[in-house]
Image 1: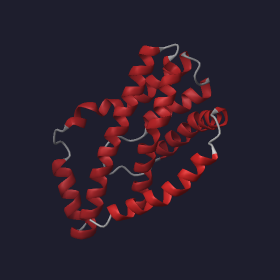
Image 2: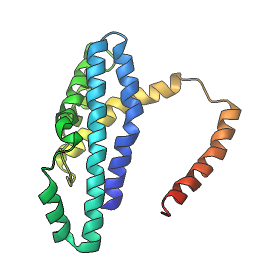
Image 3: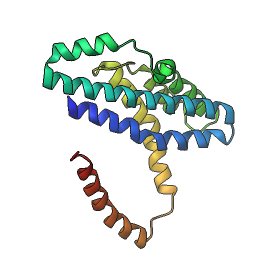
Image 4: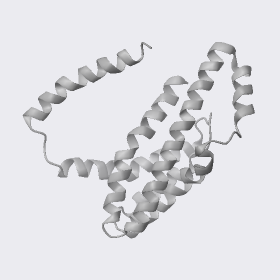
Length: 184
């Protein structure tokens, strides 16, 4: 469970550059819908990241104090107000706005735009497991963004030897720092 929730969280965090790139592309011809759609999706991703923190805490509570205790804490605090309480609508509607804008701006075709919109189907809130709509939404996102991402990679300049060498050095250093961060 922890691995599944962690992978979902990593996917949410790693989506922001793709959303910014897509909103930028849309913004060339449709700046207002690009801004609204991009911001709503980003706010939605931030909220899902917040939910992932609650998920992680609940999993830790269940492991240490039992599932009943974790369920009790989450259910008793589920309606507590916080910043993201006011932004829940962005989790779903942002995808629809961005998909419509992408189609109108011809940044994505009809199939890719529909695929992007399917992300609005993902369940909203904490401790949501995988449902068929989760699979549809995630597959739709792949249909929408993977071809565009590959095209962007093919069109971008190739990294220099110096850049590759710096990355080869930086990645292990960053991995070491990441590991050190887990030590407390």
